[in-house]
Image 1: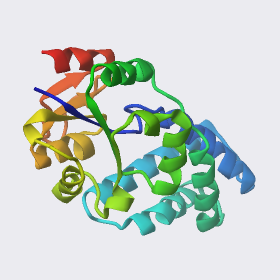
Image 2 (image 1 turned 60 degrees about the vertical axis):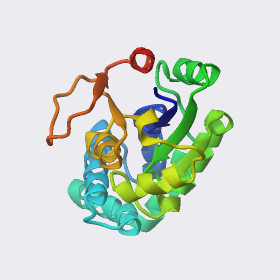
Image 3 (image 1 turned 180 degrees about the vertical axis):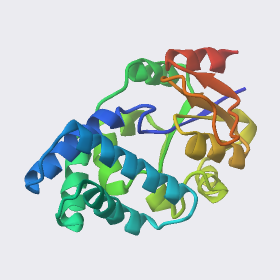
Image 4 (image 1 turned 90 degrees about the vertical axis):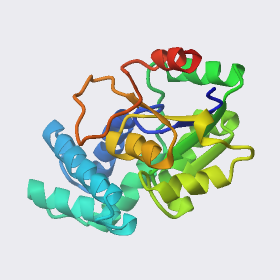
Length: 228
């Protein structure tokens, strides 16, 4: 029986896409760089590629944070200070916290029905901590695990081992992770030996050979899985 629910944060509970667009637009404007939809989309692509490199162990977190802006500016032909842009962007991102549709209802049901709720995120602490606090997630969660503080990242088994060690009376067979990333959340859950549920609102095809135990396109469907 499932008792412990691990939740990814960005694009699972909180709307990272909206926060990213707003924070990036503000940061670029402050740096004197013109903001267009095409540039925001290009940054999103570059940023995603770098986080996937982190998941594969091909880049350090510290290098990623600045390198993504260096590559972004190169790709759009703009000269700007990547390190300063990174600092401004993280500040702006940390100020934005929006729930995805259905997330608040899901969290309230999990809380009232007695599930233990844990957050598991690869996001940087300086960004995630204020967003989690602003959303009130810190008040209902039994544990908040940020990879920067843990010392390793999803999907590494070591990340989950460290989380499990901090939870009293924990048994892997009673746990599940819900997340939007096959390469981070689902692979990580499988590496750790817990059940996995892929949140796939865009109904994307499975890729990379990672097969989740469950798949949903709406957060309300997760409750049906827990009760089955």
